[in-house]
Length: 157
Length: 84
Image (tube, rainbow over all chains, first blue to last red; front, side):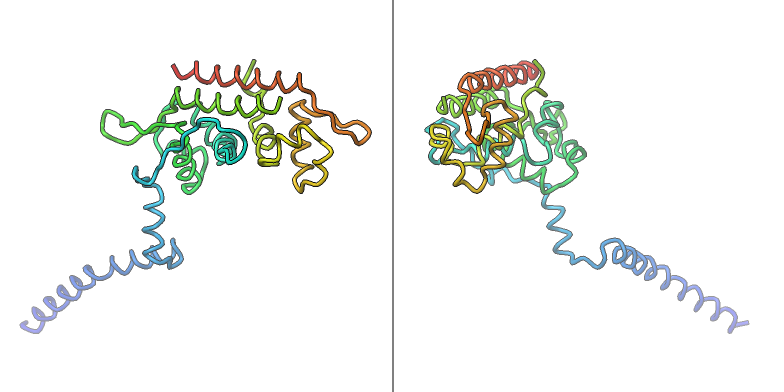
């Protein structure tokens, strides 16, 4: 009878140990299969990619000073490149990072576009009523970009 | 006028493919043959209606360029109005 009780206790302890260990191993196994054993550092970098630090963004003065050394490459790239991010952003007027990501499909591309669009004053960082970061197409900034392009074209006349 | 009437891609290539050389090439189009991105630029400039190529000669249409400036102004103004 005593042996039976000890056996039951041992089985319970073993089951408890298995209960504590098995899910962790299962999670590790699933993570390994999903991310093909991608290094933790790389996964963290991917998460960080969607976070844009305000201090990283330096504004560019879009006062036209002639063709030599102009910022037309950057301006036109923001308007026509980055997977048509400008077109989507303009249709939404104000948007969350993830909303633009859904349209463009690449974290890196959206992140680069948000940074460059902020640099030329095309978009402005705002917060929704819950304090979540959003971006808004800046009317004044779009006007400055319009004038910049027109000045460049007028110099070709 | 709809924004679709202005191809941002063509405008971007037209303004940037030749870099700082664009103003001088617009004054003397014979120089364009020396440029490695000439074919790309010509295609966009033709799409925008700014240049014509006849018998190997490239002709810049200044009136078309003025028209392009007006198109740019109108399209941007429409976008700006839509934001209010």
